[in-house]
Structure formats: structure tokens, C-alpha cells
Amino acid sequence: MLVLIGIIPAFITTAVVVRSYKKRAVFQRTSNVKSQCDILTNAIMREGYLENPGSEVLNNELMLLSNVYSGRLLIVDSNYRVIKDTYDIDTGKTSVSPEVLSCYITGKGSAYYDNRNAYIEITSPVTDPELEEVKGVLIASVSTNEIAQTVRDLENQAFFLISIVTVFVLVGGFFLSTLLVRPFREVTHAIEDVTDGYLDEAISVPDYTETESIIGAFNNMLARVRALDNSRNEFVSNVSHELKTPLTSMKVLADSLNGMDNVPVELYQEFMADITQEIDRENNIITSLLAMVRMDKKAAPMNFERIEIGGLLERVIKRLRPIAEKRGISILMEKYRPVMADVDEMKLSLAFSNLIENAVKYNRDDGWVSVSLKSDVKYFYVSVEDSGLGIPEDQIDHIFERFYRGDKSHSTTIEGTGLGLAITRSAITLHRGIIKVQSKVDVGTTFMVRIPIEHKE
Ligand SMILES: Nc1ncnc2c1ncn2[C@@H]1O[C@H](COP(=O)(O)OP(=O)(O)OP(=O)(O)O)[C@@H](O)[C@H]1O
Ligand SMILES: [Mg+2]
Picture 1 (cartoon, rainbow, N blue to C red):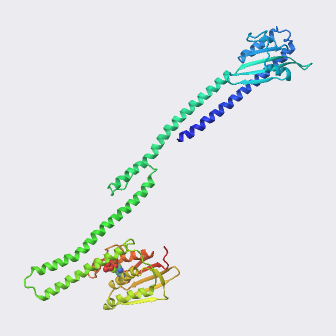
Picture 2: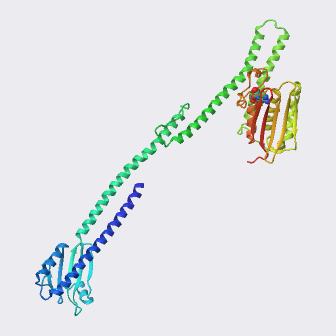
Picture 3: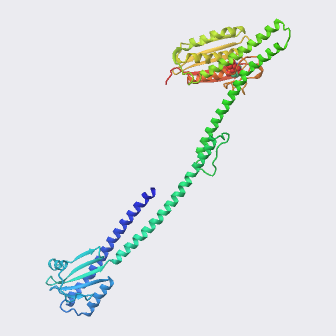
């Protein structure tokens, strides 16, 4: 198709060029012959050839001209009698053609090109310069075969050239397109392989620079998919493990009770208390898991309401204060003015509850927790600071991961599932907010949250 777009103009151009060449060639031939005829008519007059057509010199010249242009020359006198014919066919005959007549009447010559029969006919008057009277007419018919031949040659050459170019374009285009398409086909194959299961490998199509960036982008995406896949697997195995641990403990406790004879009631009570504790733990894990599922946007859509954030924080603190006071930890609330904001109260309460609960849990006895609320036109800021154990630098990047629990030394004494901060961060992200942490071991930890005041769809 594209080839046609290229070839058609080539043909048109050739036709135009050939035509104008032909026109020019005919015009040139006509004017050449015309000037020769002018010279001849002058000589004819001078020599008195019309009265006495025997002149050797003129006869030779007429023959020469007719040979050079492969044409025929006729001289007609005032009685319309042909007195000379270089072909010697019409000599002595009468010739009354329209051109000859017009020559006598107007005193001017004419030129006429017959395209079909390929000749030019030129009539020139033989004029007596003194009387200004037409005495005779010279008719020259010259063939244009040779011009036609040249035109045909030109056309053939052009056609040949165009054919060659067409073939080149076709072959070149074919090669070029396969050359261009091949890398992309390879990429497609590579992607299909990955889709079919070899998820572990990055795709590579060496030798082609065209597809480098696509492959780069694809491999990045693949890496993300893989990371997601890994975290999902990890999550599933963590969940199973966490859910199994309390069950295992309960089974050990129950089995040992069953294996003993005459168990004292005190031991029964002690073991049963332990079993109850494990049931509570199992319950906590399941509650957290459900809370996490609820943080999934699709599972539970956001329920934005305009509420006062200071009040929300106070309600959370009120719930946690009894637990804190058991260890002599005081919770302080610092706020400046009411902050009204669009939030999902249930989810945000859960988030802050987790933060303040951590601040109490990972605190020293008789420590303190300080909660502050500030705001500007766009955001409100909540910070939860404690005087607790702090988080070692190498753990700080992991604390928001599901099931991650810090330092094993205190994770055995302090209970938890490791889901709290994961839930907190989801809740804050759902509010288009951000959470940051700063911590120093044995000094304390500060969590800072920033959330937009207005919710825009
Ligand atoms: N205020 C804090 N001070 C010191 N360490 C903290 C603090 N908050 C969190 N951490 C560390 O981050 C880890 C993850 O916290 P996260 O709240 O996600 O889980 P958890 O408190 O162990 O369990 P859960 O909250 O599910 O009961 C904790 O185990 C703890 O090591
Ligand atoms: Mg926690």
C-alpha cells in the first residue's frame, strides 16, 4: 500500500517530464526547420528558381536539407504547380492545399505538427522583396519519428528505473519491518513464558536496543508482582503459625492433665487459667486479623463523618488509662483548640488506640505517654510520645510489617500479635494521611501522624 503511494507520483512525474521534453523537442525542430526554410526561400527568390528550377546549387541544398531532417521538400509556384519535389513524386502536378492558399493570401507561413503520423509540416512563402508579393511556397514535411523514439526510450528507461526502485522498496520494506517486528515478537514470547509460570526469572531479550526500556519496565513490574506474591505467602504462613501457637500450648496443657492420675484441684485450676489465657490470645489474633481485613477498602468502604478529633483522642485515652495506671504510667493530653475533620471514626480510633496502647505496652513502669493534637488550614497532626524502651535502628524499618514484633527479648514478656502498626498504617493511608516514627533506645519513641482535614473524593 505504502509502496503504491510512492510509485504513483513517480509515474506521474515521468509522464509530465516526458511530455514537456516532447513538446520542447518538437518546438525546437520546428524552429530549426523554419529558419532553414527562410534561408532557402531567400535563395529561391535570389536565384530566380521559380522561373528556372535547374540551379544545381539550390537543388543540392534542398536535397541536403531533406536528408538531414529525413523529410520532403516541395516548391509550389503561383500557378499551384509543383516545380520541385525532393521525393520526385508530385513534380509537375497541381497542389492546392489550405496551407498553400493561406500562404498566398496572408503572405505568412505556418507550421503544423501531426502527432499521430509523427511529422511537422512547415509552409514558407517565397516573397518578392520589391513587390512584396508571394511568388511561390516552400513546403517542408519533416519526420518526428526520431523524437518519438527518444520519448519511447525515455519512457522505457523511467519505467525500468521505477520497477527497480519498487522492487528495492518492497524487499527493503519487508526486511525492515521483519527486523523491527522481531524484537517485539521476542518480547511477547518472553512475557508469555513468564505468564505461563516461570515467574522467578526476569525476562531478557538481548541483542535488541529497541525493546530495552519496555523490558526494563516489565521487569520492574514483575519484581513488584513477585514481592507481592512473597509477602502474601509470608502472610499466610505467619497467620497459620500465629493461630497454631496458642492451640499447641493448649494441647500440651490438656495432654499433661490427661496423662496424670489423681490430679490435685489446684493444678487443674492453674492449667485451666493458662488455657484461658491461650484462648484469649487466639481471640486477640483473630480480632486483629478481622480488623485488618476491615481496613481493606473493598471489604469495608470508608464512612467519613465530620467529628472533633480531640474528643476522639480523649475517648481512646479513657479506655486505655486503667491499663496504664496499673503500671503507674500517666497519659497526658495536649490540645489547643477543637479540630473538626472528616474521618472514619471507627478506623481512626483503632489507629490511635494501637499507637497509645504500644506507648503504654513498651514503656517502663511509672513512665509517661504524651498525646498532642495540632492543626493548620489543611491538616491536623497527632503525635504520641512515650518514655519507653525505644526501637533499635535496625528494627524501625520493619515495625509496620504484618506480624513483625520487635526485639525477641521483650516480645516474650510483652504480649502482642505484631499486627497493630500494620492496621494503624492502613487506617491512616485510607485517610490519605502519613505516619512517621522517631525513636531512641531506652529514651522513648514518638509516632507522628498527619491527616487532611477535608475529605475530597
Ligand atoms: N511505642 C513503642 N516503643 C517501642 N517499641 C514499639 C513501640 N511501638 C511499636 N514498637 C515495636 O514495634 C513492634 C510492632 O508493633 P505492633 O503494634 O505492630 O505489634 P505489637 O504491639 O507487637 O502487637 P499488637 O499491637 O498486634 O498487639 C512491636 O513488637 C515493638 O517491638
Ligand atoms: Mg501494638
